[in-house]
Image (cartoon, rainbow, N blue to C red; front, side, top):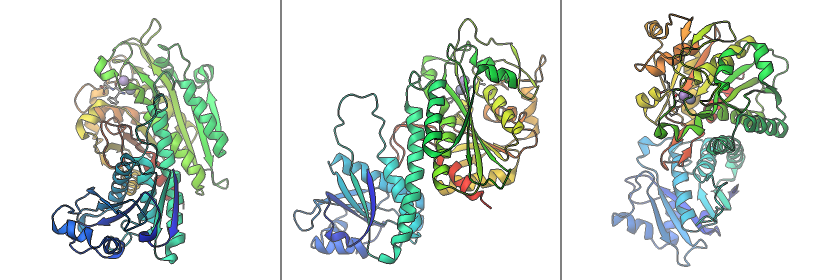
Length: 499
Ligand code: BES
Ligand code: MN
Ligand code: ZN
């Protein structure tokens, strides 16, 4: 879909549909909505008076212009209560009306800048949110469907503004929104891909493509090199699979004058069967998505490379499958991680933390700081927080606060979980330095405590996206399937880290 910002009058736009808006409780719309109402001989005011249009959040009212305007359809998007209005609501509203209009077979649509007027949101921010909402909300993963979709894609979205002075900031917002939304959709594509199309090698190939397209540095370690590095924990997980693991290091260097490099680490189990502690078929069904963290950090780097902040960022993706087999890891096995710590494997399904132990340990060895990891780590986090927010943990409150703020700006909610010392007790092993599961209770926290053993004193934050990586239904700018969560948080965080 092509998006364009233009200066003009929404009432004279030739498109299949034009979109105006209404706050809840407004009886006589002003501004652009008022102008369209006038052109429609007061149809909007009438429908408000009759109680059909209420302006409730995400209410989409469709009015046929029947020749009174060049556009076939006028859609009135409800903005909800003005006092509750947020930037994230713009994303959701735009996503909702875009999908509604696609269903009505619209190919070209035009919208006013929601939030720009009485909403009081800066034009650049509003334009970015409109761009993100439309691109994210219209996303579909149809790669393996041979049948044509019932409704074609929307070809063009015009963002229409009257005031020519706002054009530069609207365009700026659009550009940023496009880069960030497309990166999120790239992560969604990688995650939605079935595990037979997204093996560790396929992840490495995707990284190669990104490196080539965006001029990123890329190093890929193979099994032999991982052995040399002493990545016994990661290799333990990988040994049950016929497919070789890939250790992917993707780097953006935007500040060659600085030796400081931010590190993003993403869990990348391209399929998690549980290993010998095999999952139930119900639990296993969605495990192609267990590389969502890896997809997020790779996609974030692709956006950062386009936005070009003066900063260095390295993404680390330790990609492997977790499968049972004749050579698979067995409960009771002891592994040695890159930092020399020994781990008793009490559950082969707690594999993510094993791979992250070596990925984080490697990041520390490379001097990356601060570190942010993103992982579909624990079912316990999904149970604790549902699918509304991700869990965040860390050893530096300052860093955790920064990541939460970056998420907030993106509409990606993060809830901090505790890291009390007392939880560490549950990870104690009698045969090794630590064991890879602290049991059922507080499972998301003990998993985070496990990871903390591999970051030394490096400031580190861990985001558990087990509940948020996948959406069960269409909701706002999330569609069913992969959400691409954390891409936008990481990008905002990187941009905010520029001195
Ligand atoms: N990949 C799973 C966690 C997960 C569950 C992600 C549901 C997305 C949705 C992880 O590897 C896992 O299996 N964790 C176990 C840990 C347990 C064995 C200590 C879990 O949460 O049950
Ligand atoms: Mn698992
Ligand atoms: Zn897993």
